[in-house]
Length: 171
Image (cartoon, rainbow, N blue to C red; front, side, top):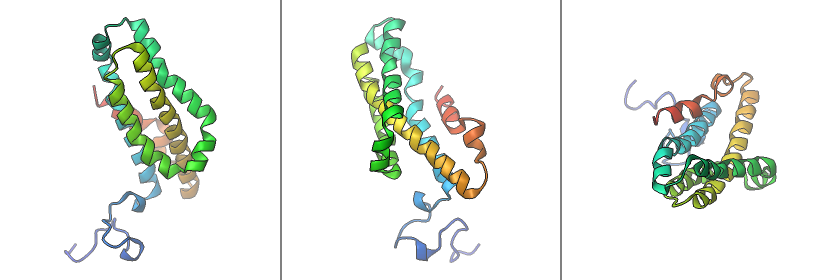
């Protein structure tokens, strides 16, 4: 390839914004964008759970109190999965992902500084709300892309691959 030829993955210049690099997310194939959303979501989750023992020690609580506090994320997720669809439709999938993926990471970082179980519960509640919305958007997009390309995206259905793999790499 000579230096004046665009890379094979580049979008034709007529479809790109002036000066936009060819690797911008909106110009990637749809299945790559779905993978990126799964991976970024897992990346946000991956840093918190390996630190639970340290968080428990810093709060000075027993396993039961820590378990109660961790239910905050589950409660938020259940509320979001149950009642969040109207909000998601109104706000839009792209805006949900752009806003809530960094919010999950931010709230997990804040939760790591919790001084007690009630504070941990309260900081994990918005994490759960965001996780529920992200789960809905990513899975709907994965289904839409599978329908659009006419085949299954193997890593979406064969395993929660990107999520599991990313979470395991923090250990």
